[in-house]
Image (cartoon, rainbow, N blue to C red; front, side):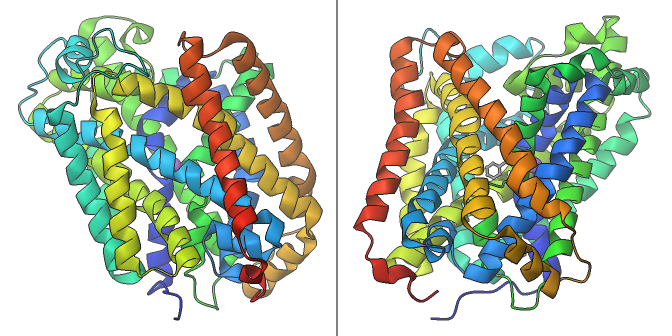
Length: 493
Ligand code: PHE
Ligand code: NA
């Protein structure tokens, strides 16, 4: 059967950008920038973008384009001993998929609350108390299923399922062509109102005011690299799957630069948006900005609702913000599910409809663990291990394989042959030396710190089972699948 293909170049770029732009850009990036030195964060961030993000994107686009498979097939075509790496990445995608959808579910709930700000005035108590009903649960003591969270999650799954089931061109590409322009319009609408609010510029000054003392701090560099891989969706099977549907004639270099630059430009825009709102809020409440900012998840579901309460026309700006969050999240969720579905289609020769039904059905059931009282804690713990241990390991191994087992010079001449502008020798330097060295340092630091200090005050048994144990199990199962594969599977290469 002939492999599906994107209908147009713009369709592919919108889908790739749709995957890249997600919840990570709207609430994670502004908070990371703020916490890691404000304006000074941009130096490590831009450095990581140029020396790791862009080369990685070019490399993954070329792997998918040349090897015509989702991650497991692509890696197995490079040699039968590498299929496990593809499965390890698919497992990362599958796990992210089941908790990412919970955050989309919250955003859908908040979209409905935003029309009349029914989250009330104490948005902190509302989110953790009334909405999540966190109580005294833990990552392994989840409490009971919360229907008011499960239902919006089911809606998110239904939309993702419809796109994946329908196919690459008719489903994913069509959804991206609607969602991405809609998202850009909403953000432009929000920003033109927000920057004119009193105090907004103080918020921006705050974000962009560099704290250069942070630039020698290893943690800041680690945060910048982690953010780049997560935000670009590289290293966990997504971009390989998407680029496996590229037509023969495709300008890889150009596509990769566009995807990275649009994503990072969007992040900075979102930073302006969020900090503009925070500056306004600080002014309204006559408080310093540091006192209105809250961390991570809390930023989008506690601080922003509180700020919306204070905005002029909150019933317009509130829904716009949460709809933007939902759309950004859904287009990313579609891409993670496609990475898993495509791997199964390649491996088992199932029809797309069958694979999509089984993947989304299983995913829905598993994701219900995050619709419980303790769901947020489980999410926090699993997300930490996936991002700081599994994802960075996967990226490092991928770099080592391409840079050292294979000739990265061949990748460069391959992409230069089919692209309008050529990339220079710097590409090889980044893939072979610079990025692996940085990643090795960051990963080692993370491993040592997590091993010694644990994370977030969770119980040792939870860390062992849901953190270390989960990552180890993903690795073991990936290797077992690899061992069970017949060697013929890669002979068609
Ligand atoms: N790139 C996405 C973001 O920034 C994150 C993501 C996408 C995560 C796809 C998983 C899968 O939010
Ligand atoms: Na992103």
